[in-house]
Image (cartoon, rainbow, N blue to C red; front, side):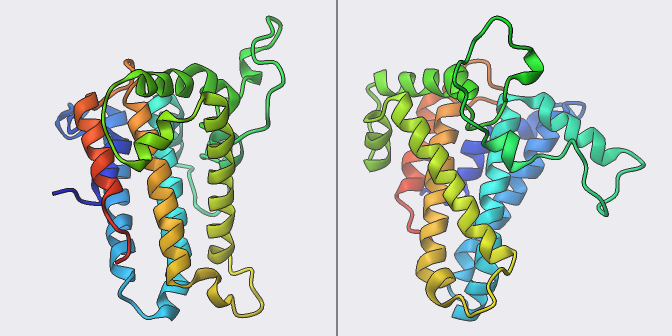
Length: 255
């Protein structure tokens, strides 16, 4: 029986993260992020039974946290060094929550970035290459290969898998870059309390349910794809990954 929290495994990696030796710092990070994802997914389910006022108040926070933690885990799967740098900063004696830190994961730069007109000019410096999860370099280096592997396979699934198989990398990159930016912006406006008038239906139960469902779908897609890359740590084998992916699709969010 599939559980919504299976998404956390698909995104954060195999059960090997729990069996890794204690000195494996990236497994410790992924375990923490998995715990947060599980907690958030459980809270999203529970809030569906709460009064409308509580859904409006807490719903945007939960869905934005789901999106942010999910993409952070995926960034770490692709580039462990990025999260290890954040970990070292947060462990430093001078670290404080009272000020911003340059090493923090940032939406602009780590998740999305500006379009790149020419990917591989020989004169470009490494430091000038964007390493955003939804940046042009990652689409070229990672997502394109993973998408082709899924499209070329004979694995069976539902509507989600059919949609993935029907896209080329140009379509996939354009749609997903646009989707995550829209979902982040929409959820953030509810978190930052920008409204000076009642938000009305903007954050009612159907809206929060739709936001959560869209984010879960995108994270499931990326979780399936990232596990197709052979060099990824704590990689889930294809049969298990597609089983988790298909299972999450069948679950109705916030019933």
